[in-house]
Amino acid sequence: MSIIHGCITALITPFKANGKLDEMGLEKLVLRQIKSGVHGIVPCGTTGESPTLSYEEHQEVIKIAIDITKRKIPVIAGTGSNSTYEALEMTASAEKAGADATLQVVPYYNKPNQSGLYKHFSNISNNTSLPVILYNIPGRSVVSLKIETINKLALENKNIVGIKEASGDISTTKEIKASCPEDFIILSGEDSLNLSILEEGGSGFISVTSNLIPEECSMLYNSFQKGEDSVAKKINSDIAKLNKLLFIDTNPIPIKFAMSKLGLCINSLRLPLTTLDDEKISQLLIELKSMQLI
Image (cartoon, rainbow, N blue to C red; front, side):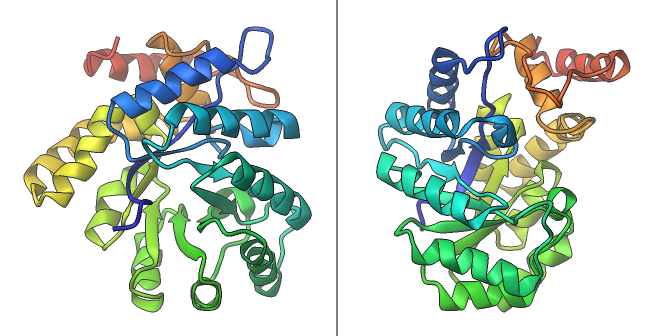
């Protein structure tokens, strides 16, 4: 089995009240994830507010994650960008720091065609020895990797080893599984589809929810792997409403609020992201209380 599997947490980036990076808070979050049994972490992804981190902060967050994990669990560094040059630079930095793999998002805003996407990811692959996980999230990037492009990238670049699939369409997972090499890793990027993607042959999931309840999310994966389907289905059912509510507004706005209620961070986001409105706060608080998290 690849080291890239299971419940992998898309880690939030904690900030202080003044908006500065909370290094000590980040260390505590990483230690909590390790103790709770997750199978990996992703610093500096969407949930980690990577677009509003400076280059220096980006490097620092990844370095802290690597230093604290001490190889206990893999660190999949979010080093993607809509600039190929910038993605190359950040990936080289993460590799030097000791990352175990890199997560590369489909370039956003500039809307490259499939040829441009192929060249972008191939260029990154050819300039790193790290395993590369593609990150397909058309809801944010507008463009989507086509199955043919994914398959070509997997066949022609030996270190493009998998994909985080966050299109929200389970049929895409089925197509990838049918078209790509047998050992190509598929990770769910939608918490509401985590179990469904495991059932379709996925290797795991990169989770927002596991920031809050890492033990339960890890148990979902572990139970499924052991063939304890009824246990996995019950966990999935128990957390289904929370999964939905954590996307009641733009990620990571809800998860940061929820974690602040558990005393795991302060509810500090960087503009243009801002806090939840009162109605959404009320809905999320009801569920947190119902689950006896607060």
